Image 1 (cartoon, helix red, strand yellow):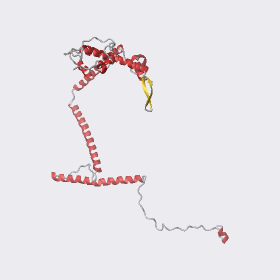
Image 2 (tube, rainbow, N blue to C red):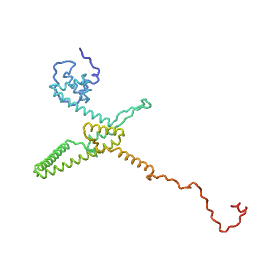
Image 3 (tube, rainbow, N blue to C red):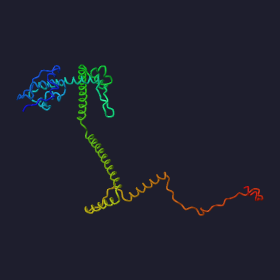
Image 4 (cartoon, rainbow, N blue to C red):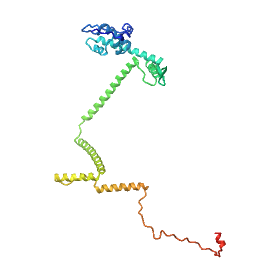
Length: 319
């Protein structure tokens, strides 16, 4: 079976990819069989050159007409140490190409299509200012890294490594001193009285925690008991009676469960409080009977005149 030529190989030929820069010379991975459509020495060298140019394993595999899983399989084979080193060097050169591409986009921008009502009407060039500042901060950190962590050169990295080592030693000494002080305190012999007091304090703390937990549980169960219907509460009391009869002992209802009388009184108190709130805080007024004769009209008392005189019809008409 003859392997057909992939038309994709014409896009990036090995001869055109020989300008990858300085690649280290490596020894190709030895193969058991020398197949013309396999990973031959020439194809391995062409793959490394394409990887250095593109920075992409997928694109490099397309350039040599091989599969990507096959390239990773070749990398794992015995005797592929030199091939792996060349692979890493090619990726480093590919990263440089990526940096050049990013710098070109930061300076010249990219063409973005412009649509109007669903139709392409033109393009416009967009420059990414954030990408430009990122490239400046990485290429010239001394000038453009104000207000942020500056990139360190070789001397700065060595100084930071030295300081970290110094800080780690100082922290180690402080930690060892604290551990030594704690061991001395633990090794100091304690008197029986001191041990008894410590145990008593611990017991009191545990008892207080348990009592607080018991009270919270009882309060929650008491609140749930009041929300149940009278039928459900009566059923539970009947269950306790039957259980006491089977166990031949007296009925023992939990103390935190309120009786029906207490629940009714509490509900009545709540209703009175609600009614009082509706009346604006005024107490309830007891209705009383009106006094006798409250519906009769009283005669108006006319004051007597000081100088009574005879009135005529004419005088009466002017009143």
